[in-house]
Image (cartoon, rainbow, N blue to C red):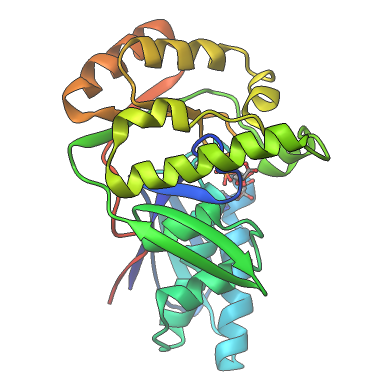
Length: 293
Ligand SMILES: Nc1ncnc2c1ncn2[C@@H]1O[C@H](COP(=O)(O)OP(=O)(O)OP(=O)(O)O)[C@@H](O)[C@H]1O
Ligand SMILES: N[C@@H](CCO)C(=O)O
């Protein structure tokens, strides 16, 4: 059985805890029943001894497998990880979604994507990463009574993502403590109107308005101060022709949306200016969670 889940970029500027999209960078897990429990990791996290034992995936998998089957069973898991951890590309969401989907498959229970998404909400209370991780594409999402309500837009292949991944991990939990406890009415209206405009722009494929629509007053500045090079990353991305350029999730990655034809030039300028950071040109992902039986 193979389960794969894409990386995601959340917030997209003003849409704090509500907007997100999926990019074509995946964590894949293969597993089968076995006499002994074992974990083999290839790619991101392969040198991290903490992931070899009862990691986030394994604990969520066991919780759901035990609940669904009322049985204990050992599995051999092999992970092929492409999503860098704690860089704002939704590594935790990918792991959560993958573990829940894997447990249902292992138990022989077919379940809808919507139900997997609602289970994921138990482990990550904001829906902006878990929704595109499950559904793919661009998503606007909210939570009511412990359920995710979301709308998806398929992203066309003539736009691409350019992500700049600094060598500094940022924990989401810690990055959330940097934010103000309250916002002024003026700033709340600013973010509300820019989020509304962003959603309309995505659904109408009006990419040129995103530079303006994706401005934010809730979280980016406070978080970017912990890695001030990000202000230059954003400036260079815009000078080179990016359609929008925003902190990805809680950072440290910076996400830019670009026209396909500009992608190589923008990525090469960013690589030249930030040789210590990883720069990747990525397609958007419209599939989300994929289960191969
Ligand atoms: N491949 C993995 N295997 C097991 N656990 C993982 C894996 N990737 C991430 N995690 C867990 O998720 C944590 C990182 O989650 P965190 O929310 O801080 O970052 P992120 O999801 O990468 O960023 P963001 O939510 O801003 O997009 C790690 O410390 C680890 O506990
Ligand atoms: N909306 C979340 C995304 C990171 O998981 C945040 O910015 O804290």
